[in-house]
Length: 186
Image (cartoon, rainbow, N blue to C red):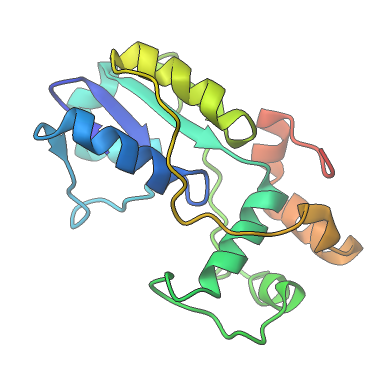
């Protein structure tokens, strides 16, 4: 999501409250927002957005990150719902989903740390409302409680992983885990 009039770029990482943030910001930013998903993916990394929108180099950029084990579980559970554009089989276990995604064409395995710069605020899903309030201050819009959109209901993510799947996720998202200081179980 980009707003040229408000000079910001929201880098949307799947399953980090992007739908909630998008639905909150849309009424405040209309009609001066750009949704050009034919040219760039809704969940593109900053480097791709910067190539398509070079003027955004000096814009305020923000994004949210989430513990990779929790984010992948949420992604998996969402893909089993009727709300998902591409649904997975109801009988597919998390372990089978992760094992099937071990290869290069597997589940979303992008590292999102590439391309962030000094003009970027990176909020944490684990502190969603507090970090979003800071973004509202930066954008000059009133703070309010974020609506819940596309949320998945589940127990703590550690109840779903075994040693093998925990390690596969740790390997796939090693850069994000190191960069953002995530630890399994926290």
